[in-house]
Length: 265
Image (cartoon, rainbow, N blue to C red):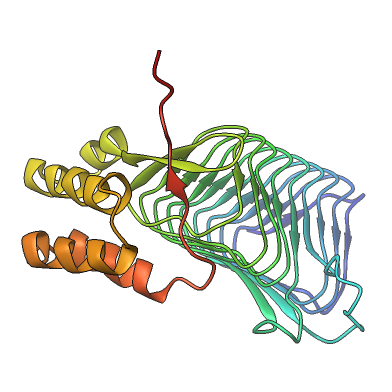
């Protein structure tokens, strides 16, 4: 049974599924769809043109579907679409898309957006993504499945972050991050494959070793990128993880991050 606290303000045209729980002082506007078994905690706001799937929990003071922080936005009917089984923690802000993007901001399923995270207009977040406290995505950022972005990190607009990436805390990401990599630094640098994360997700020893070899060829052999990619394909290209790595780099529009050069004494 759906329950709405008497202090909540829910637009009569908002669509609520079964067993939805709306807490005190929540505001839900028109053109909102909330799926079954969602919980919206006290003081959260869900603005117009927002859709939530099933089994989501929106914690106190989170703001979903606010208009973009984009001076070119003129009130067009763009959307925020959120999948299933997500946790959106306190004071997080997720904004609608713009007409210059695809008109929609998307969050997949099984994601955790910790307190004070920000997802700007036209971002696309895959499944199983974690944004730690105060992680910030500028407009048009794409984050692929099972990636973790550390606390206080900031991602530049139009950046693409591949799958199974781990980005350490307080990292500024201004270029694309290839899949399966571990990234950190004031300006994001690669430290090679995200070994611990890949092991936890069941990647084989062969796949991890291949990614280690590929990252050395790509970043540490001091050869042009085109030549490095050809060498990786020739030596390791039969593996799917390597095919995904090569495809990502070849499609990159901003260029990929550089290698973390260790200081020597």
